[in-house]
Length: 350
Image 1: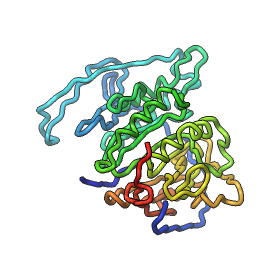
Image 2: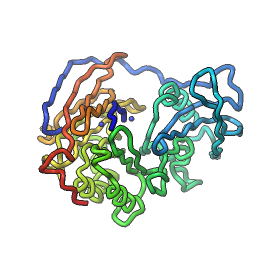
Image 3: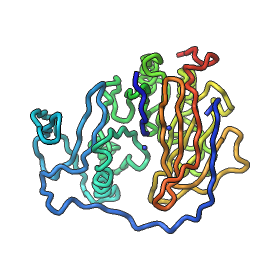
């Protein structure tokens, strides 16, 4: 079994290393909007990104202004492309492409991330700003589902809004905060089924991603149904399955919790991490409740990013890096012991 660094858009009973640095934030820069290359025509591939689709397979996605065959030429070297494969084409329309849903910003974002997303798989789940609620069209997530198609069928899911995949000894579950999650719903039944399929000998690490955090000591987004309702419905399932880490966004700040279940410190509960600090239109959520809850290990309202490094079947390292000006500064770091390796927790109760 091979373990590698793997990134996600991830303490428990081991040593904690914490650093805090004073920082005066510069004023925000202007919005960055990227246009197509000057030599691009209506059939030039743009916004290229790749995603995992089962073992040893990937999906290559891109956008063109006009319909063109979805053919990819590839080979074993950059000089020789002796193979080709043709996929499928899909499209969607908005009544007004420059409506309140700001479709050109989807294009600009796709161009912005292409240098990275075309070289390393990007596995995503939806957030509230992706829903695009339009009175004339009750269907939500139109642009998201068309532009960011994930391998949901491979995990037995019937929706692009929730699915799972495996990589580097980790079983990753992507849940949908903005689709039905109550007991008896399609997503709930799928989650129960997916957790039963997890083989901790094959994938000793079990990580879950959501958008709206279940644990949050920031004043922002308190009491939302997507947080408290989903937690009420699903937290027990994750606890019984011994999920190691739960990653969330939504709150525009960073916060890491100790292992917790049902609002109480629990050595067999997941580590909850809110990492909604990647950058946004509205700025940071700077106001936290006081005093800091005992289950909250570290919190800071700064832009940044995180890295989850799987070292082996028992040990991983999580680090959070503050984006200080244009430099990355590690501000929080913790060692995580896998729950499947903990004799007190490794009895699965699904």
